[in-house]
Image 1: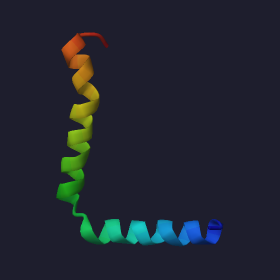
Image 2: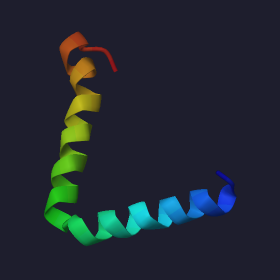
Image 3: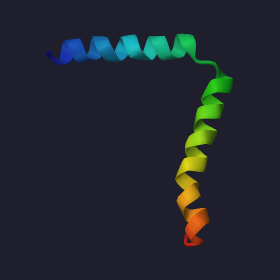
Length: 47
């Protein structure tokens, strides 16, 4: 695959994501990742 193919794939993925995702689902996913990232710090008590 050359860079033109990569650009085409990226464009397709972006359009699919924008078409199927709503703001609510994006907020849910971002909140989930935030909890996952902060969870180890909460359990150890270290910053």
